[in-house]
Image 1 (cartoon, rainbow, N blue to C red):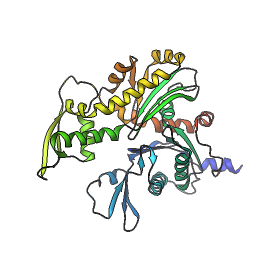
Image 2: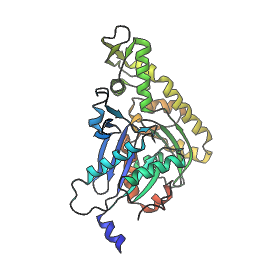
Image 3: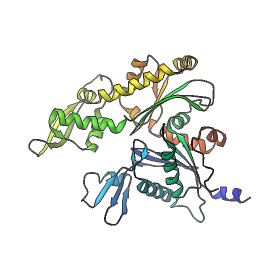
Image 4: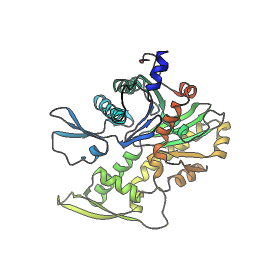
Length: 349
């Protein structure tokens, strides 16, 4: 009886706790938070000064006592306390307009493949300490597939590649389970590092991560483009120490990204090779789906298609596929119980 009463007041939440961005789905309202996974902390007082977009704007511009940090590395919590505070901040933010009693929510949260039990417990504890009553951890490729409305319950092969900020997750899904998978710690953040390294090696130019990310978004590509694209790259000259601007083009950015893209392609091909032939027959017909922010890199679907000789398409709104999957699971208790990978019997009812 009490459970039914509490359920009326409870607003369940889905969380995509990504290396680059954190997204929250609020049951009944949809996606309400989509901000960078960045926190600014005053090291003198241990106070959090800013979270998300506001904190990202501070990167590289703070005095010594203010630290801008990304509390997740390769999808794994690297700073437990800051992660907990970030999640708490977002949950309080979406509850700010609520009037009266708010019950502790049930939370569905995404996690990378190959997470250890200790790492899964760290994720679960961070969310529980942020005010959740129950936590269900689901692997991100499964969430992305559900969010993209792939028929994960059916006995057919669903091939999905989720290219996030810290990891690229490759999975073959059938009958509500992951049949074959690979995870590689090369994704969007590594692409930014590639561009920064290319600028150092070829132009003696020190470029910030935000500038590298802007270049990736503006002119980055995985295959040759019909028209040449250029963009001004600004940083500090390593020889003179003075500000410097050079013009970089799409061919040079492709050259910078080539090694990382090759590593991703090699893992995709390796996953295809170990997939059972019955599922490969389905995948040959249905194709491969790309999700995550990395799926927005121009021509990456063509690159994967050429390498695998399979049809490849990019999901609608690939950035939100994982959190949409969280939201859909909040309404499908049976599927949630089947796909959750971390038991939560000790959570508060």
